[in-house]
Image (cartoon, rainbow, N blue to C red; front, side, top):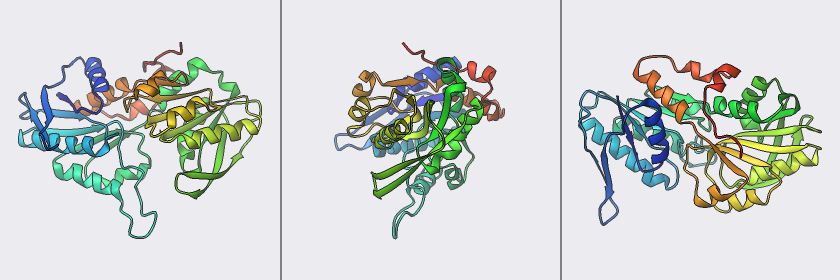
Length: 325
């Protein structure tokens, strides 16, 4: 097995390699004077099972192209199997035609990865599960829920909790957490007047005197989560916390969270945090290095990865977390 890292999230790749007890394969990824990306694999990969770790986060286009070029370099280096490990799969929100003559960019990116030479894809919490069907190669979509569950069980009393989906589309994701906690589920009915702008929010479910856990896959501008927290508190909730897999935090998201009624937002390290996000007291990070590392081990050894979806206390307790200070 060979493990490679792109430039998008080297710290996560190093933690995965440390968990697996292997060294990252040496590569040279640089840019020419005109900005063209050049990738060279500096070690032998012939007939090796290769995993390249590269989330396609900001700058999404540069990180995606770097990944595609690295896959091509591995293919031309006669790697036996190439698995693209995308902790965060960019362009996933463009998964359908939202209006006339609009692209389905998630499908385009899936085609690009396949044509470049990837034999398999490993990712975490796709924005929409059906994106797995966009790929013509095997695709494993892991869930960050086991990592979240370990943290929730250590920091909250399940009897006081309510799982909350910030919109109708994320109900299944929030239900997974709520069912594992044996807690009730609430839903935010969100109405938009324009893209990126929320006109109104209504809470479906009883949240009075409860601690609400907002569960989502992506926090971008953070407007939805902050508005949802206000709506829940307006319905009598005791406190609102958020657990979100991918911390994009674009624009003024960090400042918005710092001034919001959210007690805390917990994200994973699928995307490296900006300096501003790292300094925000309301943002905390859990690592998915163990989850990805075990998945890579299972794939390399031909074992099932489904056991990693188990949310039982014993299984969740084996996943490392960063304790609250």
